[in-house]
Length: 239
Length: 113
Image 1: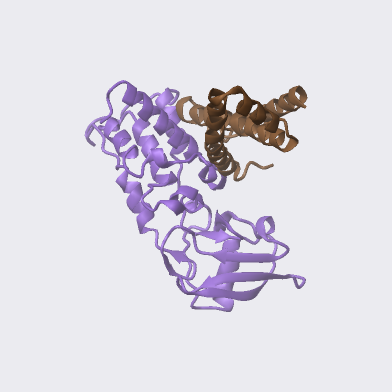
Image 2 (image 1 turned 90 degrees about the horizontal axis):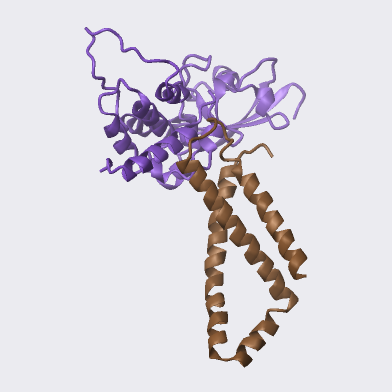
């Protein structure tokens, strides 16, 4: 590595594309997203990538950085560069649109496939009183801060093997529905989560939990779904 | 070890030890079958099993059996018991399985060699 310069390799094109190399000045407090932005502004105006908030809230800037899926806006170059070298690729397990942009449609389709929130109350009624300390609320709270960045989906071994698998984020979402007492059909949410491509496909490798940028544990949520499904089956309630 | 990829290694260990045990089973039945066919053939089989290389294979068998049993219990604990915390504590049961397998392997070596 030349002093003060990063060796950056970025995927260009579609599935049949190739890496292009760039020399980007190394700076203090530089994130991987800063590097990609600098490449686009200074060297490669046609480089496609996706970002929005730049502060770790919106979940749109995830890419594969030196082999691991990461949120690039909160990933400091110093922490991940390998002797000044960065290899930046699109997220795995999703169809590639161009350069660093993956098509996240299947990811969000699976998210809605486990069910959307449908409550028992209407807007006219007062908000439900839910004790924050109740067991179910604690379980839902532990899973609820997902930013939909698809890092877990890209990290999951099972998603790579089985494209029908719902994946960690969707099942993590299912776990919040199953535990949310305001949801009208909690058993239906459980049944969707234990159906085809559901929680029983998980091998508990824990890659989602290891890579989740906001520190959630979809592995724990999926284990919760499996456990609930098992006892529900024993009690004769499952389909 | 940071624990990264730990679950994958545990799953691989569980499956490969299962395959190894399945491959061993026909040999085990063969030994039992020989015992039924008469003392001579069974005695010659027992002499064969005293060979050092065969002893080493038996050590492998003990290790595979122990790993498969303990990693299987780990999967049951992951899937059927509530997790003490949402982090990887439950997944790290793999270390307990490896440690107990090491104890079993040492016990086998001490008692047989």
